[in-house]
Amino acid sequence: MPLFIEGRRVQLPQSVREIVRAHPPLEERAKLLRGQSVQLVGPKGLLYVQQRELAVTSPKDGSISILGSDDATTCHIVILRHTGNGATCMTHCDGSDTKTEVPLIMNSLKSLSNHTQNGRLEVHLVGGFNDDRQLSQKLTNQLLHEFDRQEDDIHLMTFCVTELNDREENENHFPIICGIAINIKTAEIFRASFPERGPEEELRSARSLTGGPMINIYDAKTEQLHIGPYFWMPFPHVDFWLQQDDKQLLENLSTSPLAEPPHFVPHIRSTLMFLKKYPFPGQKPLHKQKTGTAITC
Image 1 (cartoon, one colour):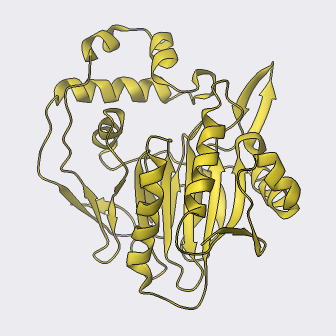
Image 2 (image 1 turned 45 degrees about the horizontal axis):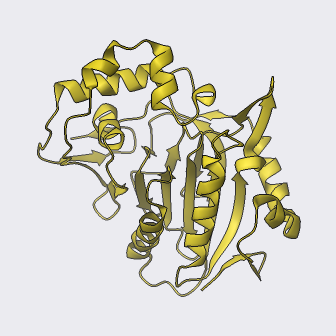
Image 3 (image 1 turned 180 degrees about the vertical axis):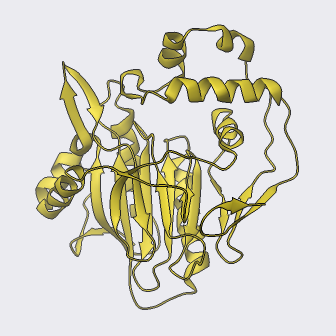
C-alpha cells in the first residue's frame, strides 16, 4: 500500500521541493521543528540509538521514556509510530542498505503492535542537507520509495530532510537539525543532543564502522538492551589511520567533513583504538537492564 500525506497518495518520484509544494503542511511542520531550541537529554529514561541501530518500545515500558539519536549529517533519523498503541521505532539510517532496513523497521514495530486495528502508522523523517555529494538527497529518495513499497498504509507526518534541513554559511552548506528525540509517553518529537551515548559506545561504534548491518538493540518485553555478540574482520590499515592527524581523519572518514560536530574526530580515534585492541571480537552478548535511571548489567 502507498505512502500518504494528509490523506493523499504521495506521487513518486518527486523531489523534496515538489512534495512540499503539493503538501504545504509538511513545510510548516518542518519550520516549527527547525525553530525549536535544542534540549540536552540526560541518561535517565533514555535509550540512545547509534548509526545502523534501531530500537522499538511502547508507552507500557517502565524503563524507557525517550528514544534519541544525533550526529546525523547526511544520515537520516527515522521514527515510525503506531497511533493506536503508541509502539514506536527509532533508527539512524546512513543509506548503506535502505531496501533491507525499511522492512526491518516495519517488522520490528509490528512485533510489538499485537495487530492493533485502531490507529495508523505514521513516519517522521529528519536529517540530511544539501551536501556536495548529494548523499542526503539519495537517502531521502530511497526512504520514500521503500516506505511507499510496504504492504501497510504509512502516513508521512514530519519531513525535515535535505533542503528542508539546510542552512548556508560562507557558501558552505550545513544541516540545521542533527539530533532528535521522541517522548514515548506523549509522542512529542523535539530537537535534542546527548552528553552520553552509551552504554558500550565504542563497541557499538566499532560494529558500525566495520560495516555491520542494521540491528535491533532492545527487547521491550524484557526491557533489556542487547549488545552483541559482534563479529568483524580487522579494520584495514588501522595503524595507518591512527597515525593521521585530525584533518586527515575528518576528510577521509566522514561523508561531510565540514558539517561534523567537534567530537567527531575524537570519537573516530577512540573507535579506531578499540578496533586495534579488539581486532577479532566475538564475546558473549551483553544484556543490560534499563532501570529508568541507569543501565545495569
